[in-house]
Amino acid sequence: MRWAMVKAAIAGTVMVALAFLIPLGLMVQQTARDRAFTAAERQAAALGPALAITIDQQAVAKAMASTDAGTQDRLAVHLPGGITVGDARTDNDQPPGNGNQGTTPTVRAGTARVDGGYVLLQPVAVDGGGIAMVEVYVPDSDLSRGVGTAWLVLSGVALALVAVSVAVADRMGTRIIRSARRLATAARSLGAGNLTVRVPVEGREAAGAPEELREAAYAFNAMADRVVHLLAAERELAADLSHRLRTPLTVLRLNAAALGGGDAADATRHAVSQLEREVDQIIRTARRDPEDAPPVALGCDAVEVLRERVGFWSALAEDEGRPWRLTGDDAPMPVPVQRGDLAAAVDALLGNVFRHTAVGTPFAVDVAATGDAVTVLVGDGGPGFADPDTAIRRGAGHGGEGSTGLGLDIVRKLAEGTGGEVRLGRSAALDGAEISVRINVRTEVELPRQQRRRSGRLMTRKD
Image 1 (cartoon, rainbow, N blue to C red):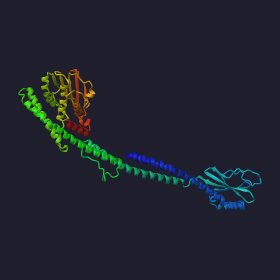
Image 2 (cartoon, rainbow, N blue to C red; image 1 turned 90 degrees about the vertical axis):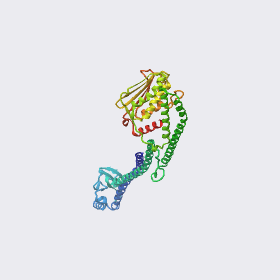
Image 3 (spheres, rainbow, N blue to C red; image 1 turned 30 degrees about the vertical axis):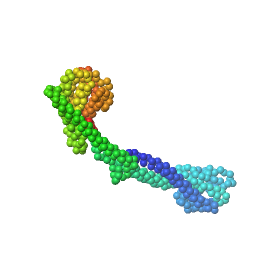
Image 4 (cartoon, one colour; image 1 turned 135 degrees about the vertical axis):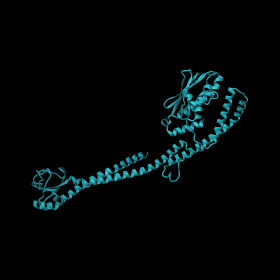
């Protein structure tokens, strides 16, 4: 913007300068030409009195020597009878007659172009009733005297005008750009998670800012305040909703305690305890000031998380008669995501299998590591995806009663938070749905730092 304003100022000033200075320069040039011919006419008129008295060559030569043009050998007189006094530059083979001989002079009054300049021809009445032609030589240097200096002065004025306009435009552009950059910096800081950033609209820092940018700053500050208010309301709502779950959780815990022994009873009690811990964690996180939140270690072993979550779901699979398998879990596979985020994503994938396939449908979980990524494949023998694009879109899936359409979106955000991706397809082994989750290990290369932090915060809030 700053350079654009400077270019606009240069273009406008140059056009205005040319519109005024070119005609002025041409007028100066014409004035110098007129001045030179006017001076030549005065030199010719100065010989009029002497020629009216006598046409003696010596007298005429003496009169010519008394003029400036005569001393510079720029003056000549064509006398009647073909006599020329001085250094003539025109053809005088047939000089002006005396009016009685009937001759036609070849040299006429006016100006004529000669080598190196012009000559002014001025007829003068002489003694005896004849006509003499006074010739005054005007060199080109006299016609352009002072013109070069005038053009230099005008050019200097034009350059000075351009410099002043550029300085003014740069000054104005600096103020506008400073305000725009301050607004852009605040927007980036807010996008990175700094909810306390505001744009100054009063005082020295905001001095010189255009009214439009001031209005944008007011709007930005109002938006930031609104974001803070909405986040606070969101935390309160999450805490309130989580607190409402305590009553049904208490009932579930009492019912689970009354189940007695057995693997199914133990798994149910374990699930209820874990659910209570998750609810308590949500309440504490929602009530805590985000600025006081302790840093969370980023990174976990994908194989360990998969073993734990598949083992948890295996109890329900055995009750429903679902064959299952876990392959590729021979060696640790570290990934740059939080353990709770990965566990929530795996639960979302396996929960979809149990929710959207019939009892007894098999499923399989495969994990593999490459040089820069860890890929998790979850396949089943169900009907598959009718519309994969809609299924992965946030809140757009139609999984029936009890489905929110957010499970695959959680998985997608986890993968994209590391620069990876989620693909939906068909399982070649089980002839059903298959979901491929690629988690990049080298996130510094795949994703900018600010985006990684932002993605981490989004996933933490969703969990």
